[in-house]
Length: 267
Image (cartoon, rainbow, N blue to C red; front, side, top):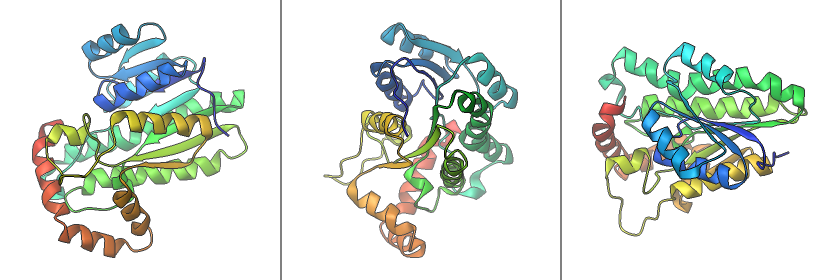
């Protein structure tokens, strides 16, 4: 069962990035009030100036444990959670400091889990609500050079699926959305790595539309990726070794290393 967005309050994390802004616009266009969160006050102010009413900016650092708990309280009534915030956390494990691993786990996995824990009781009392966790196709397809990031995204997928089962019959739903590389904005666009000619990547608006569908139609999982990558994700569930071997042959590890170098400062 889905939740109509019109006149609902949505808590959106990671609203200051390109993907987050696209999601905020899509939610706002459906009539929702968006409690938009992020670390950069200036970017939140710009989003508020662009969309006007029904945008409520909240500065929050999801790497801070007390900040997550405070955000759940400051948000007020929340009908829908869209857990979109994430760190790239790309790179081979040996290149990470211990605190960088902890930070990736805190932002990408711990914060969504803790926000869900805090918000679900009130949703259950009302008999309606929805939670969307923006994972990644890396949450289905392993690749060399992405071990930390992939661990957080696999974890988010498992959390969303199990939570969906736990909440069955309560009127509260849970979904996971799995974007591949995204054009124009987001982690991949920031690397400025060009893919082979003819490969069309989904846009931030495509991901935002998937988030809206997940909420309003109650879908459990939605992939947002070109057909070849969706096929790889499906095969990875039954033949992970084969998919990993094909990825190595196609140079996935080298691409991941280049992405990690471009994103190192964001750990």
